[in-house]
Length: 384
Image 1 (cartoon, rainbow, N blue to C red):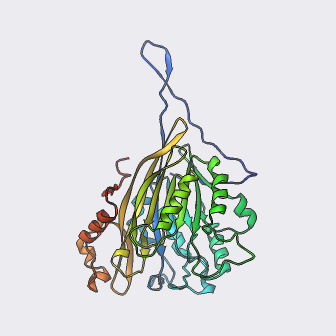
Image 2: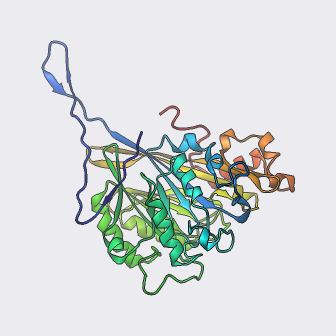
Image 3: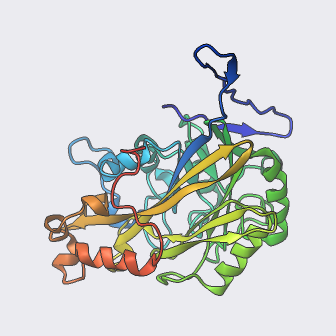
């Protein structure tokens, strides 16, 4: 089903979806109004899509870039979702800037084409690598996404007016979901002084203002946070403090990334009586990193329920995913852990190099991090 995305401006109007009030007739009795039925919306969120040098290779058959196959195994978990989010760690700055990996990344835009084809429609760019190739690459990234119908990017803006007025709201199934995104920094590469609006940085007064402007316009508010300490499986004190700050602002869902490894999720009570669900780190999605722990990420799965104008998280959990690549840094793929098996693990380059790449290792790591959490071992869309 086509996903509808609306950009809401102060001068624009919101297009509201309507539901038909159905009635039932009891045999021999008067027509009565049926009990209201809840509306549901499903959201999945992926972690760091981080393209290192060995991943940037032309297809030998076509002489062009094509990354479709990298996401084919994960597509059945993305396309059925009403909304699919991913943290696109790196810019699409164009060939003129030179494609590159660590430490200053520039990724072919064909990666974005593959992500959109797999079903992702909300793309975060508020990351520490957003300034890797300068402001021109940031504008090139925005220009690229403007050519892809049905996809919205987060965390970067062309002008102060756009930063002030652009509101990202996706309306689906009678539920309006709003999005904001922020990053802790840009690796010491400064945001231009004359363009402070270009990148959304973590700045609590600004965040409070932007959340207050968006909160009344949506039923469910999501904030993407690029934060934390790399390769740490537990949230830092600063992550915890910012989570409480966001909860106090009425944020419903926090999607965390940057550590490149998984961290737990939790619910927080809010002053308004609601709850905030925070995924501290979704880990890596696809990358060329070379430690065992960075090969395991998760998809966050959230089902949102709306009844009588009350909106809440009806179900949530994580779907572990494996970042797989083979000899010579080839055959990069993302697999759901429930489809990953030892025959594949034996082909993983890191396994060949003696690293701990086994299904039991990944299963155990997920269990250790998400103690008490809901770890999904099947596709939740197959029975929904």
